[in-house]
Image (cartoon, rainbow, N blue to C red; front, side, top):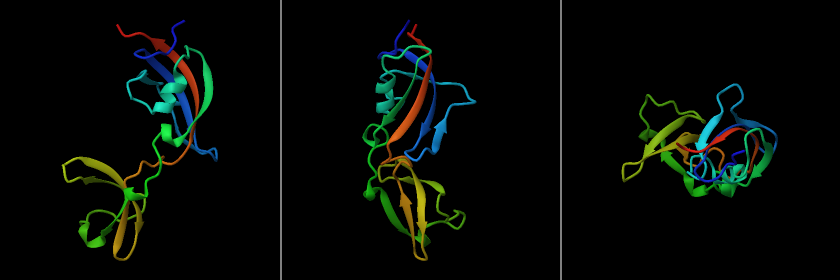
Length: 145
């Protein structure tokens, strides 16, 4: 039976939960997620956890934040004067926006807080700073043709 190793194509089902048991993502009811082992397509800790598994195997693993979406970085938050936002942008906590860096790259941000004069934007990934638990079931492992 083929094992998941660097370069193999793996299809797997998963359910991701936070420490309190809240489900943040799941493939249940959808097609399994497919990725190439070692390619950087999924978070590093999950890639390492699946390594060596074969079709039909299941496991539950906890991935520390450093091997998932990294630590929460306070410098990823920025206060922007409210008047810098166009009138057509809803200024509500949780609204997702894109900012453009000085070199032209687009980065996703979320409105974290809205005050009378300032809007706080957060560029951290929503799962940054969180350890993640995944229940994984490998559906198939194949080599590339």
